[in-house]
Image (cartoon, rainbow, N blue to C red; front, side):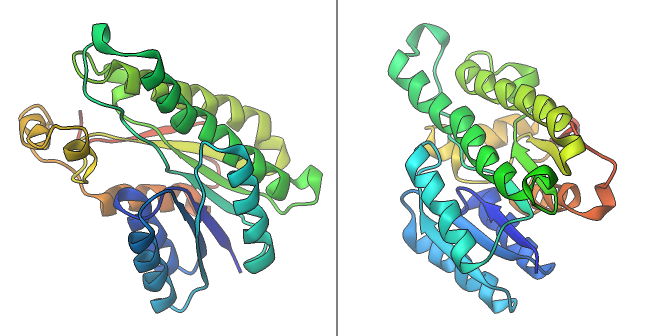
Length: 247
């Protein structure tokens, strides 16, 4: 059986990805930090598709908790062959002159360090030179990494720029070891992330500058992620796939 790990999957894109993966035949392990009820609902949805599910509280930015999460996956589901590094935050919407060091430390710890930690644990289990059977990793980037996030999220954009660089480097390092590494870069997506940052009207505002004239959905991003995990993308690695309606 194929086992997929999705970090930060109690809601939004992570939850949509976990459920779609289960529908397509994956057993799925998800992590969450605070939303236990959401995570358990996702786990129940995975089981409703007849697949095995594991939901565990594990802060993706915490090394010990990440190690414990993967150890539990080994024990209950078996070694993973897929990883989606979804856990992340935007940080507050601020201009550069209002950004603090504490904000940056929290943002980069989750978005960048968290991606590295889960990737490291996945490599230990997937790499063919370490006895694994290979696999695929998909990182969550953002169109902000290319656009820059001026006036609101330069700090967030910079963290996702780091994810893009990590994706390319890991793809080239791991290709001969049986692991493909790609990323999706969502544009404006209809999830709770904007409201949490205090920008409840942002999606409506951005719709005017998106060529497709609408925001995307978590399910649309999930379908792109599942494509990059599947054998249909077997010769794709090091790609950052825009999922932003043309923006």
